[in-house]
Length: 591
Image (cartoon, rainbow, N blue to C red; front, side, top):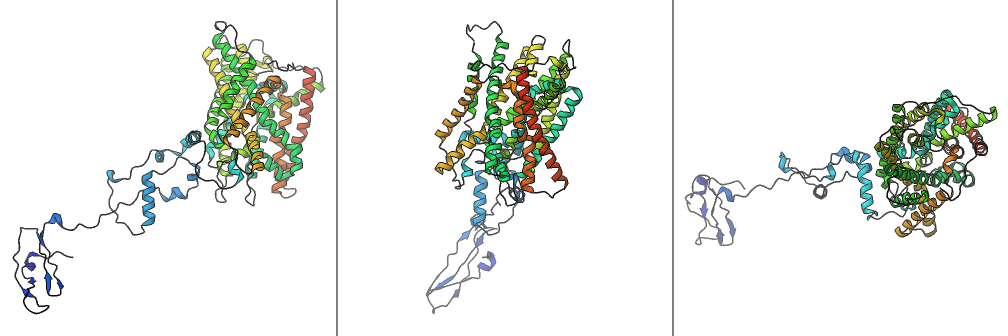
């Protein structure tokens, strides 16, 4: 109601008790108060009696307009429409954001826009300000703290298994996992392959195998999602879809399981031996302990550390561990080739390879190719890594996955090529066949190199071995839990999960102590792993994608697949011949 001016109030009529019903007599009312006072005279007829509350109200007591609501501060619409929101676990809303969003959805009345001052902004939590590139570190820490999810999960068996339990990975996660699994201890023996092949054929073979395995990586990334929407989140699942269960049983299970469990055995041997070497480097002959630890006891120390980290629940939860493993792998590879080149060639180094016969030279060359193939590992884990990423028809997982693979293998190439070429240039045929660059560094430069550099290099190798143990053990963990869920139709309880992973770790320790000579069989092992890396992806592409006959993709995959199978047979034969000819010191239970 509009305010009544004082001049108009003086002429307002007032009701009298006399007179007829409804009669109103006019009584002048003088204005009271000074300037700015407001009079209101609501006259309501109520039968014979009229109420006339005429009270002066100052401007302070006047009814105020309704409070203007500040529009809620929410994230821009583009953020909610972006697929990266589900891939960035730390982009959370603060409680104020959630409360404002709830109110805005309930109240559909338009709000009055008012200019916002700095103090009127809705406060934001620290989590909402976290940049997205920190998420690969933040998410595993949060996973390790919570360990279990409180929200109810759908009754899908994939949600109970370590590989597919969490699907919030991204390109950063993929790069960390791929780099950690792609660089390992097996790269340290690459100069040994060049001592057999020589400069020209060694560099040509290294380059050709690198691009060959990069092509098969591309095939696997694009085979992860089928046309009907099925996701093959495990290498054996894709193998079964392509060739059937019987072929998987006889041709796929053995190499895949070896690349998982067998690599963990090799990591225990390398990690324990390096810990012993670090201890001897630091202490020398001045240690007060009269009885130092044996190799088997160092293996046990390493196994206990690795098993402790293996209790992380799923593949996404070890993204931070894989990042540490990737950084340390790049670190020790760089230190080794940089120190070797900086110190110059070892006196008496030669590059001429002497062979007894043409037959032995051919088998030696095949054995060297097996060593190179074994250096490029990790294909058996690629589909598992991609299975941790969200995917939809509009935003398929192959896009961020391939981006992460390209970043990772750019780093792999920058480490392995200088390591192979620089190591062969510095040591030639004098490089030890057992241990490669690690043994050469401590054998030739233990006196003219700082002890701190040697210790840091050894620590990087141990840390990388612990981190690689987690990602290579994950397919075996997943297989054990998959058997449990199929039998009992429920997720494996955490107590059984802890026990199963402890059993896996200490079973590998037992094998490492029983067979400590596995490191000298790199060529033979490379032949066993070659089809998984170079041959099977080509045949799986032909079986699933069915390219047009006599097309470029048809010829390429048939040619590379058949060449890979032929190389597998030749390399296995060459590895066996090398073991028989040169001999391997077989010492069971004597590490």
